[in-house]
Figure (cartoon, helix red, strand yellow):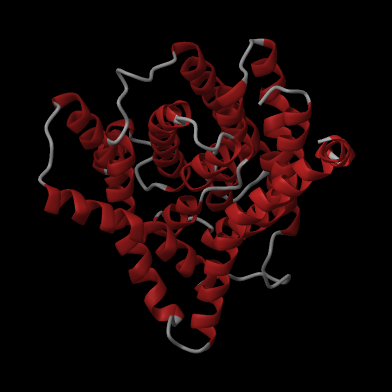
Length: 331
């Protein structure tokens, strides 16, 4: 017994946590990169030629992505898990960040096709893909309804703002507010969100075969989007806006979480609530943003580069944030 106590006391638990944090980042991020690399490989051997990328993107944007969003919204019981203070802070911070970017970016970047991509790259995160894995790995075995509830609110907000963003900067009707509103209302992501909320409020249940079909369709979205991203990836320095890419990366992975996490801590958010906010602020740029950029005639090459670079570097930045917050016993 004494010997066992001696060896337990000799364990460096900080090193154990360090290893767990590294493994967490690797488990979350490596599948993303392997799928992107597979897309690069398939393009090189001719199985995903660039001539088919546009059609695959349209299919993903108009079919699979809306189904995935519909599934995410309808699977959340808003009445059971609804934390007003957390939702209020999350919505306020996203809207504030979006408003500042909408004012600031056009004064620095001249090309509207890049303005929309830069704004989106900073405010919109890969919350669905990384949020749940991050929180579930931190709180193994616990109910993670907090982040599920927050995702169901914030992801539709991300998408609504993105639709408005691309219409504002790139749409042919951006000078006609009625046409812009019509385009937003007809957007597949907005329709999917509305249908998901109606489904939740109605209390109806789909038959088993339809549930399984919708689940299968939604599960196609992220792997296909990552394959498309890899197949269409262009990191040629001659065609890369290095300055824009660097600024967006620093803002997305460091500036945004450092700006909004301290007030959240001051307001008393702890545990899953703070971890959910961390995942929202510090996750890399959204893969679906790349799909939207290509379908909205924006600079989708820059959008794809932002996704890849922020996804790579977030392995390190997320690890640091998780380690510090855990050390301070905040999550």
